[in-house]
Image 1 (cartoon, rainbow, N blue to C red):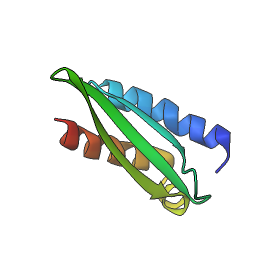
Image 2: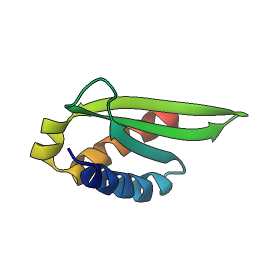
Image 3: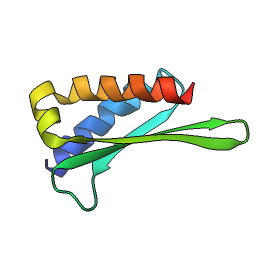
Image 4: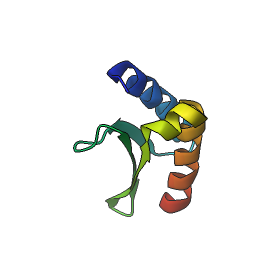
Length: 81
């Protein structure tokens, strides 16, 4: 996945996550060419809560970046609630 595609996922994540009161980003996994790492952050009770997971690029290709972004935001929302 090229950087332009990762940037597009990040734009979608920013919009979706903001609706739920947290921030979310995606980046290429440092030691893997075939995974993207997704992170979500929220300030809560004088600290930062974080939720992180990764998805294979093949899953993004088959499901689409919007579907994966939606799935991650829903998972993160449940974890950060």
